[in-house]
Image 1 (cartoon, rainbow, N blue to C red):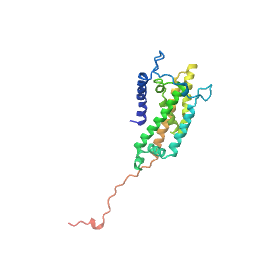
Image 2: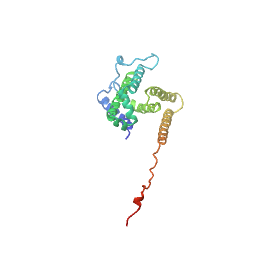
Image 3: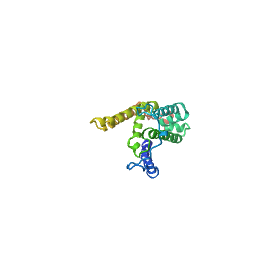
Image 4: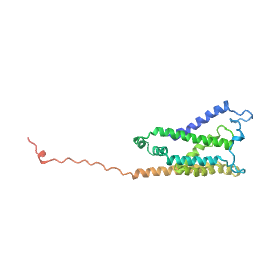
Length: 234
């Protein structure tokens, strides 16, 4: 099974584990609402907004710092080089003495830390509490995967594609509230973008396979027989 698919499926397992702790330990019992959510966090630790009349908060600046740190790590460090080489060709890394499993676990831990930062920013800057099923139902993981595919796994490109996809998702919800355009239009647009990007990757792989020269077929030829070997004594 693909590592990307299996780790994405673990998001649901993590969501239900978080629901267990929220419902049994941190549940907000001050309201009669049926939502599984924690209590509101203290205003002193909430992320302030950059502009008072806008919803943009300082979590966006933290995201920019994470993008810059990720680019530096992947392009200017030994770990980043080994991670990129492991993604290109695992057999080549193993042959060169690089432990591909060690790199894989390191990348998994690093991506988990970055996702944890994203969740903290979402709680401290937007909702001010944890609400069950808010982040899984919003398909943040799938949108992030689309952004990575579109940008070719470039951290700088992921920044811009994420803003574009977020605009499509948020704009689709706003249009659906104010007009008769259905909300699913934004999902259709994102699906078409993913389809075109996937088709480009498949075409590139097929072109690469065709460009590899095939070795010439070996021709079978009879060995040369000398004159002495032709004469047979009876």
